[in-house]
Picture 1 (cartoon, rainbow, N blue to C red):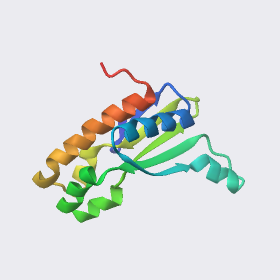
Picture 2: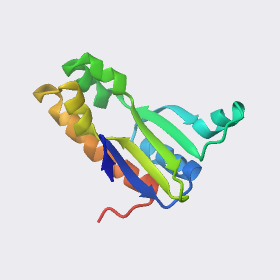
Picture 3: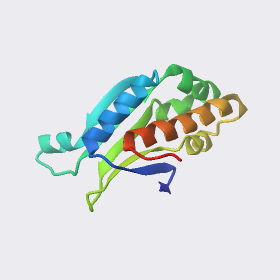
Picture 4: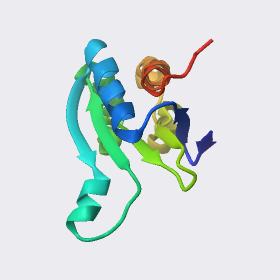
Length: 136
């Protein structure tokens, strides 16, 4: 499912386990974890209800730097983020910004084309692995 530049893949796991799987997958791939945000826990802190929702922020300078060298403002969308969330029917999704959409948003050109393609391919792989989705 793709909507407004977002790619969403249904996960076979719960929200926390999906993010745990993503942490493991990206760490093994040599990427850095910058932050893990539990939005539902934040909601509970202010007495509000929110279905399970967790954000993982991760990446590597090797991937993102070429985008910012091309158009420095691309840094607003970096490092990469992925959101695991539970919908109204109890399905869990892992969503992220499509790299090609980010390239279009920031007017990226030839200078970062290879990096954008690598990010797109890498995200597809790590998200599928974290969600327990067969890529064949």
